[in-house]
Length: 366
Image (cartoon, rainbow, N blue to C red; front, side):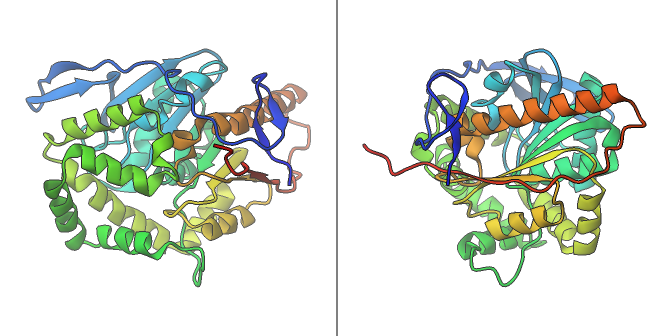
């Protein structure tokens, strides 16, 4: 089947091409140490901090002008997850990313509930402008859906990358070792204990390598400067007392949320923003079966399957990911502008048929 990829001219083409790795294109991250007066902990900044209603948030502005794009990382991630695509997307939009409360270099909020994380994303959108295109990966995808449902006036469009979704059983595509690990991590009492044991038994570099082997299809394709950024964040978090609780306690909230399947379906069906769903075919974290079921709830959403990548295509296949996202954004933003110019009497309720595209790459020649 034809596939969309990035050609040598920089334009989207229909052709098969292996994923490209472009090292050195991303801007370098410069770390400075400052004092966090509120808690007297050393604060390492990769970007800047902003005080929102939900608390203090660490965020990064990649620059650019035009429509706003807000990027939301997954469980255990940070804004550094977007460094391979942030500068590229900033060629067409104003692009920012945040560390969710208690993740990356953001302090925790009042609790670890998904509603609190959702409101932090919504607060940042309000702080930078009236509306934004929201791009979310894994947990960030679920939170993006929650923002679009609860605050539709804030969301121009959604791009969901392997969004956290209720499992569909029986499912032959489930990666059971990963599923058991996630289930144990989200179990009250057990999850925090297991996480503490893992953190205490490994160096930060070992922790990052373990994470990359779980979330990327080919860890060796991740740019070295991104790996070093992940390690720097992990080093900083090793000195923060709340860091060890962030993943298991937020994981418990994810588990509770996804168990309420009827409420989840109602939320998905309430979303008004045009939506693109990107799925890494080799994803061991979120089953392709679950993501396909998610898209079956919304026939107007578009699903793209990317071969030769896993849970985080924006990290290990950034060029192909951008080649998928940019044309979609141009198409849908121009459509939204056209509909707005036609006025409120123009009928816009007709549902588009779902688009299901496969983004593939051939066997490498070297």
